Image (cartoon, rainbow, N blue to C red; front, side):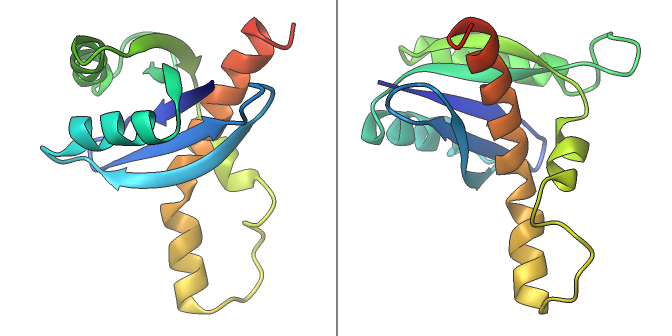
Length: 140
């Protein structure tokens, strides 16, 4: 069994997967937020034996629902209608934190490497969301 972490965004959706023992989270991929998103997530879940999804619950600095919150709840509902169990995990500044992780130092690198690192930022944010859930609920 594995868990999938999702950092839902208007343009891109970051995906993370747990290991099979559900001890740690790893960035996996970034998917464009399009009409095909739900089917792509379901396919990834089936392929990777994911039984539960942990979706970042997006709030603003004051802890109130932000602009993307309602859209992410609709996304949650669609995933549940497809048979996945979906749990919300509070997220705050995960994209900023993901940017601070190793591998994002200000060293000189070629354009392709920098672009790939920026794209995978959403997947690293998803891994932070998933790891938070694992630490609170599984690695107690």
